[in-house]
Every structure is written in structure tokens, then in C-alpha cells.
Length: 410
Image: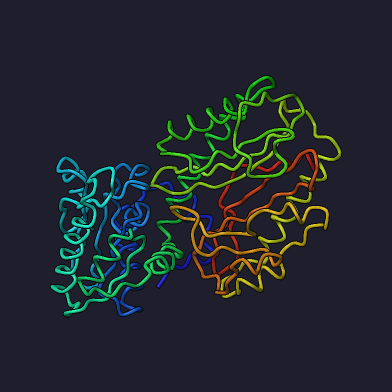
């Protein structure tokens, strides 16, 4: 069961005692195993380094292993956690973790690493995982989940008579609900992000390029114990409309709107995700910039007020802020999304986009969701991007970011 903040949500966030990372790891591993037991699975084989980090607390060349197929972990529902690391030199790196029972040498199927021996290595990997699963209550034909299998792994597991299920839902549902200690850690990570944003804002000036501004943001998060950016979404002036243009070498001018989405992996591995917009040179906005900003802020405030445990996703989408027609075509990709070690379950679609994959479910206590807003007319000169992370408690939504919006633009 999740912890309950009750009326003490602010006191929990303001608690400056050390983060109990051991408690966080135990909670997360318990969440994974509970999801496996619910689905009558013998275990889960994880390849995604973010899922490995969630389940075990371990990391090793995090970004590289997102595309190099060479590191994995097996979590038995009733048995050991076995971590497979690339190269013998990596084996000692995570021996300190109480969540990991054993560390073995990984068998890579990646063509860069093993050339044309991928099928051979996949067969050896399948046999090893099958042995672990069978030794820990899986029977002769164990059922396991796999979060991101390579084609050679799928073939090898079929040959080894291992029944595979999609592990992505297992991990997304496990990760969706946070412990109170995770919420505290998320808040600390977010504070590092906000410090980096403040540092960037102090440095930004006319005649600086977008890339130089982004450099200040990235330096700020690394200096504060963060890790890497997941996107490059910082644009200015006419490049703020439409959204999702990547940072470039455009020279910013006084009075331009600067809009950005942090998308930074901060301390403790959390995805620190806020968006802000302001004018370059700290000049007062034009009437049009003010209109865009006011609408974006209205959207965030309206959608935050709706959040509560037990609310259905589609009902939330149906009742969310309705943008004026002129801004609908350029709407953001989603109304809101879960947030933890990455963008997580659930993702709430705009009602205009239901045909592309919208699904239902219920918001739960101790989910963290990021509320999204982008306001920019099709063919318009600029656009405003705002985003706020919100903690859903039994007593209502709690805003997690202390970085201010532009009250002077109201």
C-alpha cells in the first residue's frame, strides 16, 4: 500500500533529513514483484537501463546502454535478483547494492560487440535465464516478462520454451505510484533543476545563441549532481512556434520569447521536467506575448485543480482546459503524463487525439504527473510553453515546483 501524506504534504517536502535510498530501493523492488505476482509471472528480464535502475538501483553507462544491447537484469518473483554487466571490469561496480543477489558477466547480442555471433549468444542467454527461472518456482516452462527484447532473444526464448509476456506494462504500473521517500527525493532532484534554470536565466542576454543558453542549463544540472538531458527543447523568437523544434545556433534578440522544457535527469536519477517562457533581456512582454502566456497559465491552473485520486483518465481529458480554436491545431502532444525516472504511465491524450491510442485508467494517490501546456497559433510568430509537476495526494494536488511563473505578465 502507498504511504499517505494526509495534511502533512508540505512538511514532508520541507523535511531536509537525508534521503533514505535503501528504503526507496526496497519499495521499488517490492512494487515490481507485486506486479509480477499479480500477473502470475516467474520473473522479469529487463534490458531498458531505466527499468534496471528502478528495480535494482544500479546504473552503468546509462545512455550508452540505451542503444548498446549489452546489459540486463533478471528479477525473480520469488527468488534472486541477478544483474548481468558488460565486461568483467563492470562486475564490481554495483556490488554494494543490497537489492542485487548476484552479478554475472552479460552475454551481448549486439552486432557491434559480437559480430555475427548474436544468435549464439542469445541462445546462451536464454538458457541461463531459463535455468534461473526454473530454479525459482518457474516450473519446466516458466512464464516471464521481458521489457525490450531483441529479435534474436525472442527467437532464442521460443526455442528454450520460455513463455514471454510484455514487460513494459509491468514496469510502468510498478513505477507509477511513489513512496513518500521517493516524493522527497524527487523534490530534491527538482530543486537542482530549478537552480540550473535560475543560473541560465541570470546568464541569458540578447546576442547569445540558443545553444549557449542551453549550455548554461546543462552545466547547472551537472554541477548539482545531475546526469544528462533527454531532449534539446529550448528555442527563441519565431522558433518557438511550432513547438518541438530543437535548440539551434539562432542568435536571440531583445524581446524574443525564450521557451524551454528542461527534460533533465537530475540527482537520484529523477526526470526533472518543468517548462518556462520569458522575454530575452527581461523586457516587458508585448500584448500578444501576454495573451499567449495568460492562456497557458490558465490551462495549467485549470487542469491542476481537477486532479484527485480515483479520477478516470478519459474523464480528466474530457474536462480539461479547452484551448481557443486558433490554438488547437498546434496543441502539445499530451495534456499530462506521469513522471519519475522518465516520462511514465499514465499519458493523458487530448480528446482530439483519442484515435491515436488514448486509454483509460484511474489516477492514484502518490502519483506524480506533469501538466503540459503549449499555446501558439498555427502560423503565429511565437509560442509559450509551461509545465508543472504535481503530486496527487488524498487531500488534493500539491505543486512540486517552487520556480515561479511570470506574475508580472498577468
